Length: 344
Image 1 (tube, rainbow, N blue to C red):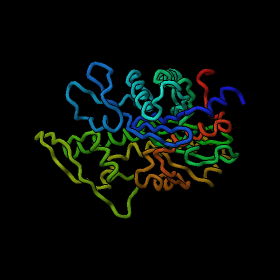
Image 2 (cartoon, rainbow, N blue to C red):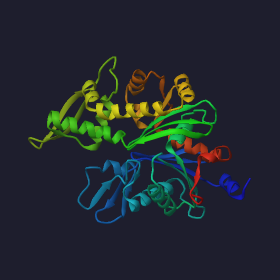
Image 3 (cartoon, one colour):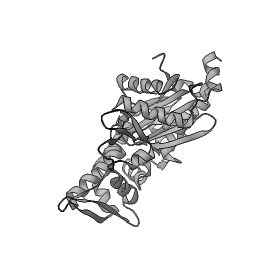
Image 4 (cartoon, rainbow, N blue to C red):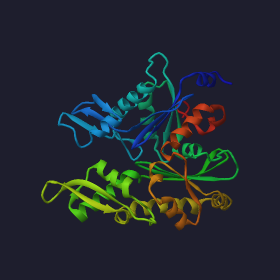
């Protein structure tokens, strides 16, 4: 075993799923130790951190002029490097406060990330306190975290629907055979709900209210018993608060465009998959991970339209972090799925 690999095993190393919606941190030997929204509150006109995570998310749409609550990642990549660095540092300090032993970190990245975007993420992670950074594609991390046998010759397929991106990939023999990424995810579904409610009810919803409606009454396939959810926003006519009740069938119509785009993306990957591996996928089915996997009926919708069995992974929100965490725990076995940033 090389010296750096031995040091990896001895260290308190971390895996970070730095998502558009949530950041999940896995610590070697302890499992998932942090799961917080990827939101920070900063002093207006500066990068001074006021709050991060859940406390910062609670400030969205509620801050005074002197404080701004922002999401420093968009579509799975960094939109504000300085604020992202501060957010990562804050999260790392929560789980690894020692400045004497800096952790080595595995970071998850979208499959279609550009070299410039990847370098920005690596640099932000290094400046936040990591002494070495490795990257793993979210498609592979999701497959590992979902418990798929990625090292076998038979292929497995995973669909990871995050806040900013949807990653679809077929893995076999420890590698990604084919994959595609689309920058549509939970955020676009929330935006579709906001647009629908604005058009139909002249009601302006905040980000949290749209997410609440998606969780409470969202669905991608007809339900045996349709449900409804009360949601409150600002009436665009009177300017006053107003509450309406919206049913799951209506929410389903509102989110049809982004959901149909996700279905089409999965179909496109199946279309280019080699015939032998496509047969494996038909036999084994497709695993859904990410927050989008929790949308009611999405597994049924995909199975109905594609003719392939579909199942939701256990604890899909943390599947990518668990997969990256396994890379930390079993580095000798899973080393080849990682990219050493010092060598790239």
